[in-house]
Image 1 (cartoon, rainbow, N blue to C red):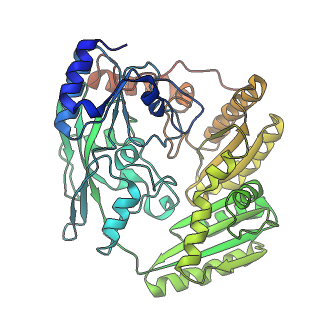
Image 2 (cartoon, rainbow, N blue to C red):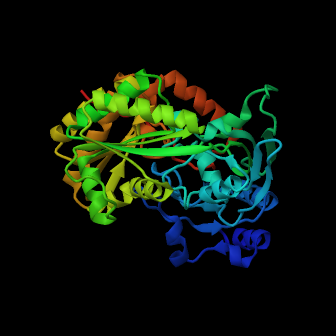
Image 3 (cartoon, rainbow, N blue to C red):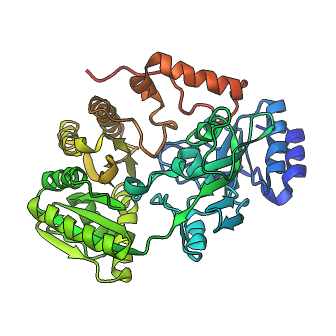
Length: 465
């Protein structure tokens, strides 16, 4: 519980309408897209950096935990207030301050919805590539905090590749600026990319300077259907080996296809064991060349059917289907848990095979969908958190998935973040010494441990035998 005096002071900073302390209103801030829930003691919705700084000073003086939050779409438990305390939500702080066509930059507040930024810059012939599947609701502040990716990560990279500078409020209320509007900047430590992906454990992001690029002249979407999942996975490796770099290269297995068609009929081939959804972009000549080369590679790889979108509307329909995949899968069972196992791209076929073996071993219902072009697969387990036995099998399944991913030279997370769910496994990847380096940075910037406590760093668990 927060003291009446602290609540009064917070109300004075953000305004009575922007402080929530009633339990009914707090429920919306108790969860993200994972099975974890925990009520905060209060929520503030500040409208500028000065208000955030004042809130952080008050929380620091009172020793109250603070959990930064955007739209709450993250998939690792990162924005769940495990220890109660105060949620600082940035959704009201949502202006695009500047779009510079001359400098190819945008300056935005953290509550700007990703899709809104993309639409605004595309009107000027510019392009902001990072595209998490939740882009229609997720916010830039959350994207930066998680270093969010998406389908276009194969060609264009993730949020960290577009963050040029940040304004961040530290624990205690100090405001710092990192980076700037220049493409080259090696002055001092790279603090910008220290905060990108820090998951709200080091500071609260209040502004981002983002790099833009020219909007591609043309796009072409292809759907390749395979009768065997293994062949689709092998085709991904063949495309990468041929040095073809599509904007996106997505994979969906039969379970995913069926769930999407049940949830949102989109014309996906129900007789396919797997599909690849591919988009190439660039100049007209470049797109035509890449599409023709892809057709050759896919046919050599045993594609059953190849469909080329006839126009932008058909392409948009296919991508809308892909973006509903998680919702469609989650709709079938009370609980859906998705991870983001990421391996070197040539290890995608091996990872697909191991995922199937582990699903059989632990008797879990699994779907596979993901950004195969950049080695990032999302195994989704459909279960019921009310059933302890089912959940135990799911936990053991994912622990072994993490082990296999690391054995294949991969990483625990490619875009979802460590958060709560993967925190016990961080030492598996970095060793005790590596994790201690991270802890020392955390202690230097947040000596009281008030920023998003319980996330990223937890007691390690034993590896599967």
